[in-house]
Length: 515
Ligand SMILES: NC(=O)c1ccc[n+]([C@@H]2O[C@H](COP(=O)([O-])OP(=O)(O)OC[C@H]3O[C@@H](n4cnc5c(N)ncnc54)[C@H](O)[C@@H]3O)[C@@H](O)[C@H]2O)c1
Image 1 (cartoon, rainbow, N blue to C red):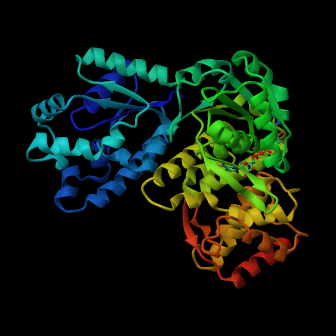
Image 2 (cartoon, helix red, strand yellow):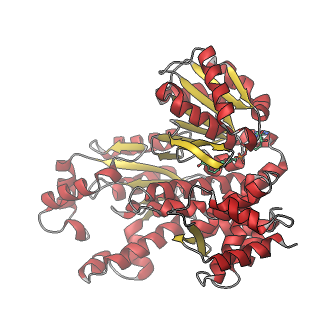
Image 3 (cartoon, protein in one colour):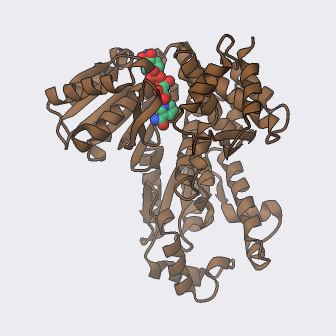
């Protein structure tokens, strides 16, 4: 099904006029977001503001766009502030191509005054001054679109520009985040030289590959970029400073310079390690990530956290160094062993539990395919990372399942895969949420059913509760000596920064370690 075409921009930028014209040209239904909300709830938009109920309007707006984002092949003109909510934005971005419309202030004022039309509550009164203030307030939003069109030309030309941008963007980045352009699709590795050049990434290139991923997919990449291949051994046990030192030496040997680029090909272990090398080699070089596991595409490859383990614990040394490009080529997943696909699905299910009930139910009943699920999970990660720029702490929700999961992973001496340990951790933390009264009884069972449907474990019989607990304590996420948890309230909503009584933890650890 064709992707939605979603138009955003300030009042007067022409969203409705252009949207209707573009819809006609494409032969698609046109939805004006505000008009849809008015019809759905039977209340004019200005009424909410006149009655001091802006919050109610914003809540309905979120619901409306989530509903619209579930459909496809629509042309949608969004309300001026709708995309201020990062979750709304993420839902719309994953449903289609988002195009930002802009125009000089004079043109915006003229159109708003000429149109008269429906009252616009946020710019009533002195249109120019109010509009200028609105543009200032929302500058970050209006400057944040990967695709944008200036609407200062005759209508037919602007419609053509919007349609051209829509066509072009379908091969373009799915998400923009912290300087990363993230692409998802098939055939991306063949387009790699162009994708890297478009972001200004330059030779000399060094390809750091997971030994298995590079055996299957490394050769064409290495040839296309004229990049020497440095293989790193597979597995968490090699995500350490010894590997980093060997890679530094490889980079030196092959003449990597500050202006050059590291390209990582592999799962989360490779991305974390190669990204850490990129963060620190010669005080930092640019890098691109080619995630080749479900987990790395859905989660680990996005967000910019890189690092390695110490014998004392996971991810204890690291940096924040986002890749300039993430190219998740679904074709690489065809060689991924089924047990790795399963393990990666744990983090995908986690994303559903945190904030995407549609993702969760699609995985619970098997109606969502793997590629669509990965994109939805990546959108959750992008939204959460974006929100955290404004609301300190929400990023901690991504740790759902990880506080106990990391203890389980270490206590198993890494015989459990990361995703398997997170699966056990997620169930255990849902049980904690039930015990604390944060979640209603039955949530843990609902999560367990979904995890088990995908062949994931929810218990780890044979491991010692005290070993798990002491290994959890060496987790770096403990604040002031106390562990803080992200715990699910219900499917799609997660609390964070929660402290838990030792007795409740002990009870849950007993539960999960018994057969
Ligand atoms: N940086 C972050 O924000 C973040 C977030 C979540 C997890 N992580 C990290 O990610 C790591 C786990 O990542 P993972 O699950 O991808 O594990 P992984 O990198 O160990 O890869 C799993 C296995 O798949 C193999 N493999 C990879 N791609 C392949 C392909 N296309 N074909 C065949 N085999 C292939 C690897 O050799 C390995 O054996 C952990 O270290 C975890 O801490 C990081």
